[in-house]
Length: 332
Image 1 (cartoon, rainbow, N blue to C red):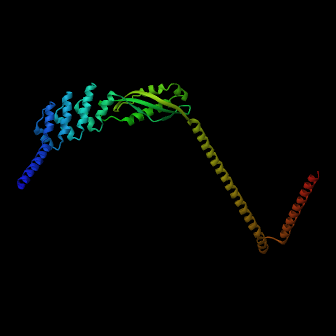
Image 2 (tube, rainbow, N blue to C red):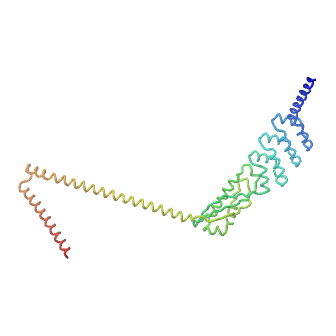
Image 3 (cartoon, rainbow, N blue to C red):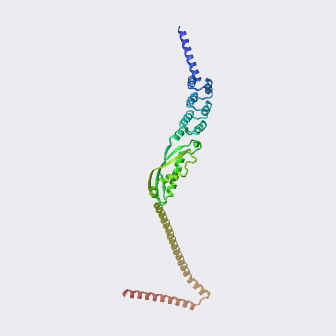
């Protein structure tokens, strides 16, 4: 009795395991759902998907939605897109949304956008509901040197035809910032910009900044505008300070050259005095040598001494006269 009970339990467990394996490998319930939704697909096709390592529910469920929406999509297109690494469900949702919004969008285009790494459903939604992009504060300087700070709001709409290979939001923000800088920089005064901020919008829109991007610019609105620093005065002050430093450096250079020249002249005077002293020290030797060789007589030597004595006397008299004249001037 116990043996027969154990046998029945084993048979039941084996049947349950076999049924689990069968229904996991043969998605019968998914096949029934597809047939109930009007999608004619064979169970063999679902089993073949298993063999190709494709999850059948990832293909059949989007196919059911596409069939109910009236999209002419076959299972091979969905399966090839899945094997390429795309998001089948998102592509089908984007096609349904585009159909409801009367936006022309084919499966091949939607699949290419999805494989390019862009959210095709978000692109369709942005085509219906435009998006507002707020730029950071852009600082520009007018011709009078006054800085103007501008913040803009850019309303864009996704361009599905340029979504593959088109530039993103960063390019839009950079181009708008460049247009703001150009417009403010071409104004004669910052007051002109403050009086007519819409001139920035008109000028930037006329440049066609959305070319080559995945978006279409609908409008550019100036959200905030403010006056910044006096850049012109600041630059002039910096230039004056730089000129002052240059002048001081040149003056210091001239002073150093003058000091060096003075030191050089002093060195030359000392050198000349040394040469004079040396020459004077050689005079007695030269006189004795001249007397010894007979080139100079005793009378010549005596005349030389008389001349020296007369020169010294004249010098003494001139000093006495100078002292007398200075004393007389003081007494007066």
